[in-house]
Image (tube, rainbow, N blue to C red; front, side, top):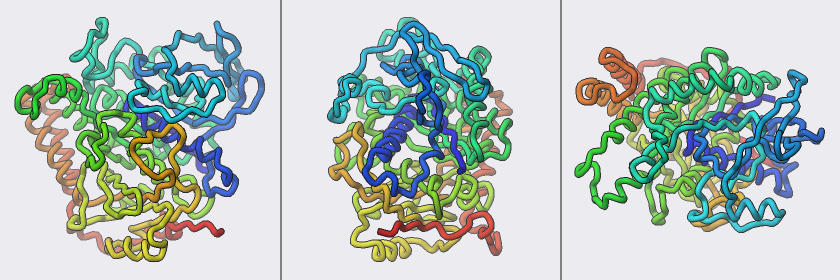
Length: 515
């Protein structure tokens, strides 16, 4: 078994992470669970509760601001002994770990009904104030990490935060990570615990916010991961978010960027630029996810709602992880990154997806890959019902690309079909069972995004003085040069000669389950 350790940094990432694990829990409950080709042990760990009972919980470390945790307890009933003091057994050290329980917020209607053993209707968008309001998973006490003393970036513009400052800048995030580790040792004690109990660690699957101070926090954390686990692959989904959206709406300007240029806007852009450069340097795959308010909105959805945007992303983040967990015929993070980055220097990957039988996939990375772009490599994951049938659908997909194996892999995963988990937003998809096409790809379209960052890096030292990034003028110029080097790696007309990836990729990536 090739296990994965999951990491989550920030509020947008927490929503996506909870959606993901809610989906996995839903797969467990299906009648055909024992017939599914998915090895859930890849993402889950077997442990022991305080009463000696067996537990099965995500192999996850989740970091978020304390103010975003809502009603969740760090130590839940699987590990709880009494109201005043909690402890759990550490199977590696043989010692009891003790935790003190802090007061929690008011539970949502959905969570209260779950606690009563009822089968509640899915929460509405208006009911969800925190990712804890729709979470269905139990977490190990080591999984939950609350960062105190800050509020969400942009919050100070809209409300009295009681003197707490916004979690805004890259350098602030780096400093907070160092301070948190100095006090809590979460890397040395908790991450190592999960990683070193694995039989064969496949890699790290990461969700990270990159528009606020989590950009610096996650970059510093993953730099330490790379230093400690030098040969272990890291794939990261980088979530962008417009933290000024509520403030812009309150100003009632049609084009707030032209009318009122708030300084925080430039800070957010700086964060995204620095995060992309640092993550590209230490990770094997970086999948940027553009700000949800810029997505195509055919159904007039509230894309500024994290509950809605994470519900839209979930079918595709879930699907692209399934080949990493197949019992047979799948792939792993190392093989996938080798396929997508066979040229070297093309670690920035696009996530595209379509639902409902259409092949009109939307680029959630904001890179806008199209037929006119030169696609270097891609992985498709197709889930039923296939329309009109699998053979016809495969012909259509083949006709849309010039790539052939091993530069393209395609997985037909019949079971489990993607069905909305019980706490999924019901305002988005009309069908309970969704046919989905989800794609990870590298293409020369990335050059436009990298070029934008390169130009910004060149101008930032002169226009904005670094914006609290902690970088000198010379370092900002070096940053620009890094982006131009990445830009050249995505040249659409390389002279690479013949390629043989058969040793690293294995057999062609297709999976069919016999009836």
